[in-house]
Length: 418
Image (cartoon, rainbow, N blue to C red; front, side):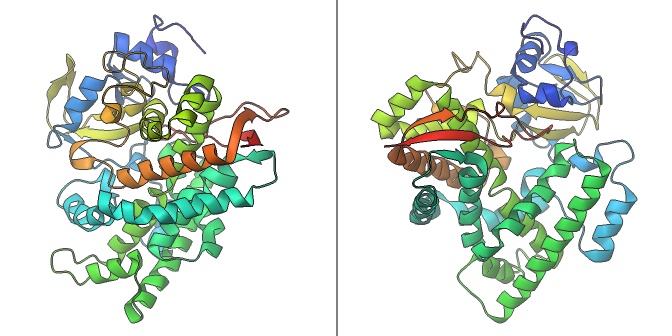
């Protein structure tokens, strides 16, 4: 992989899994030479500077969010995938983060009150208890596989508790959540995409039954609130909309990106002993650590926008219907906004300035929840362990190939109790 930022961006292909393992040299080259860069492989425009990403986000009428990655490939969504949903379940609708008004407005009106700062404060004891229980389960062991044993179950257990589903189904939830997310990576085979569609339908049937159960016997959970929203005159969600909200907006969005951030965060600290020592000695820095993790290893590396009329961005003429990919992973390392952008700075001015959780209309609804899960996770880890080192005998951590996300597959860690 090229290491010099002076190389042309054309020396890389962001659709190459090898480049996706560490895309930051490529991002640096595009920021310096072509911050609105047309990918020769597929014609998308990558927007890689902080200011230009922010300019696009602040003009939602000019740059629309309603773009499905699955429909961008040649030939759009294959008919056999559509048939699975039509014949066995429901075609998934656009999520809150990938839709525009009026659909976006209705869904956000339901979701936003569920994850306010006040509500997250109320949820924090649940998060802390989940962290403690997971660490208790690892007690007495010196070697752990961090992703599957800690960073994945933590947000999954929390969101499952809030939705109102049993923890005994967590293994199924993981398979279902992966099935939702993987096709959006734009890197899966057709065979895997068919398997994912069948898994999503299985999940839809599971939650359709639970929604009917809550209609008969309400509880204090999100499923019951969603049932009530179907009768709300301003919302009136039908079953297809309810299932999209549960499966994509709550289950998948409520755990996949947080898992990625927790995993990447520990790896960053393992590679930066000074930052680890600083946050260990001053727990108030946990808040800034969470922001630096999100900035440096943005779990959602990019989001799509569609150009709604001919315009110019960063000196580049864009035609109506052309597709932009806002590369948050690049913008959040823009030196013009973040001095010493490639390293953790726990004293950074305006630590939450990054774009990892969006801004404006599409600011992440679960942002406060994600931040608290990061703070609670690393607070618990620092209480439990004195050191974290790579376990000998394992290959360096690798990332699941994805044009969209940044998820460490496995992270083998040797820990020393505090």
